[in-house]
Image 1 (cartoon, rainbow, N blue to C red):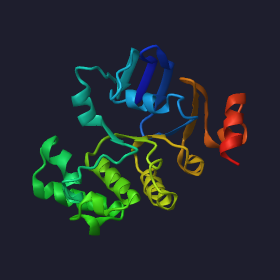
Image 2: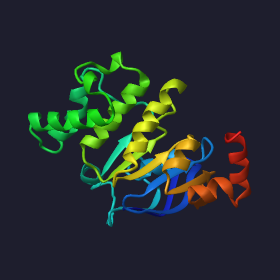
Image 3: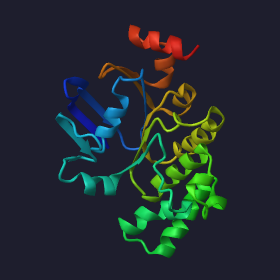
Length: 240
């Protein structure tokens, strides 16, 4: 479903991604971990051309993603959940969730609203449909952002540290929604520091450091018997 081939990304002289080669299968739940500055978020943003690779190739469902076709490809294939929610403050929750289906996919308002209520039910926020984002907690806003992503019916959802901006008390409510989603046939790529989530949900975990993928494997291998010394050092600190 996603394939990165020899992807490099520079910001000026800074070499952020170094010859990344990665495949994500349809329906796979891939969790990406690593220290800050390791290139995790840049890599996931290259998957939908929010960041255009300096060199290399990105393929989505067998079709190469380019600067010219990125809008159409993303509209058909990829939704993204960001760290900072990115909800429109002047729109109600319902309006936020129905915006893309109406404007980009041509659904009638009534149909888009019926669909939106279904996804708000999934994230447990139907009763908040007619309020504005500013009245919601951070965890609730992120759950709305997930409902908005689901409402686009994309094959792939990218999560860029979706709990990093949340109060610790609200992190679990977002993770619970993501755990429920992991049971669906949606391809998920999740950048996170939540190791418990990675253990429970991931089909595969990759560890990045200094712009490269140093190690990958199933959660049971990754957390119980990592092979790379840098991975062991990272996990020893984060799993204390």
